[in-house]
Length: 174
Image (cartoon, rainbow, N blue to C red; front, side):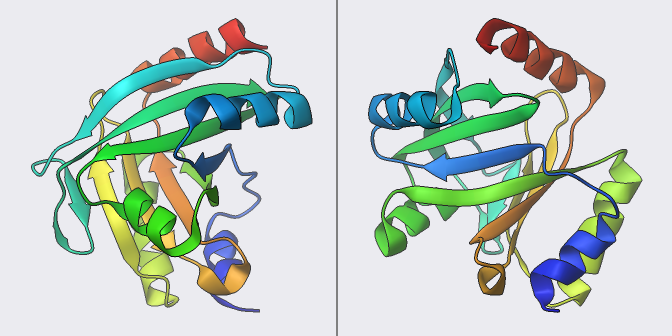
């Protein structure tokens, strides 16, 4: 079956909650995805800092900034990421592949299941390429799933405070 199938087996009956693209031009990508997926409005978060004390990239402390834009197509969150400065999984992707589909995200119910899902993914041969914790306690880990046709799968734990923030964005954009 392959590594991606093994990862998704770990997330039993899990529907991806997010589809994400990396781009150099947020406005152009927003326009195309609005047309193709029916996203009505985008909410931008400029200058999101991933700091060395809360994020690791390829096993080392990360320090980078990205502009983020969020919308929804139905219940699925659409995320656009435009690197601004520093080295990251996003700049690496742009350098190697150019703009495009970067990852899908699956969610765990609690921090313990997050840890378990990440450990299971690594045991299945999908190493963590970048991981961290965002303000508000959202935890994320990108595992490499090259053989799936998706460059990365993001595993996330989304606490209530962040979920409320995402729900507010969803109400604004659908």
